[in-house]
Image 1 (cartoon, rainbow, N blue to C red):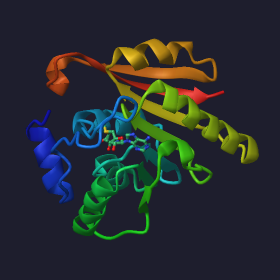
Image 2 (cartoon, rainbow, N blue to C red):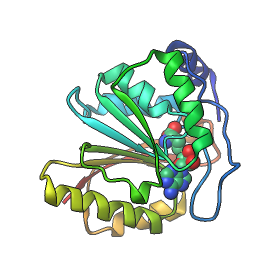
Image 3 (cartoon, protein in one colour):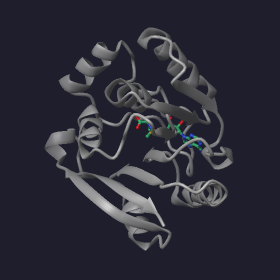
Length: 198
Ligand SMILES: C[S@@+](CC[C@H](N)C(=O)[O-])C[C@H]1O[C@@H](n2cnc3c(N)ncnc32)[C@H](O)[C@@H]1O
């Protein structure tokens, strides 16, 4: 849901990311809905992201996370999405934001993407936890081959992720911030959790 803060940030960054799009949704791959900027502001305040980090946004859609984080932190971002149509909008947004080599968009299913360049990962309800387990295997393999500290940021409100995350033995919870219905203008509260890959 959009509020004035979302529209203001889109306007400041000169991008159009606010309109949801569920045209390509199926039961495992969810549709486009942007993270509220208030949540991204909090992510920056948590101070887990630094200029030298490389952040992958799994299921980037129109690219909001990439633009905001690049603007605030100055780090490299890689948006991955399986929708060619949404990626085209992300690339049009990048033209408006100001072409930069630090923001790349990759057309791929997240479960096929090899994340060797990245050390930070962001997910807002892109797909089922079944697909996430495949993604996590790729991240684990990448960490084995190229050892580094890996943090994964989850923004979520669904029962699916609420049930799954505490049971995932490969992840260690570092921090959770709760967002009230009022703050995010939604019907249910949501959570931003930071996990470390063990
Ligand atoms: C809820 S939106 C999140 C958008 C963005 N990350 C944000 O937080 O503003 C989920 C996105 O995941 C994408 N998606 C769904 N399944 C995917 C998959 N298997 N691989 C890559 N992207 C996927 C959708 O096309 C959609 O753009």
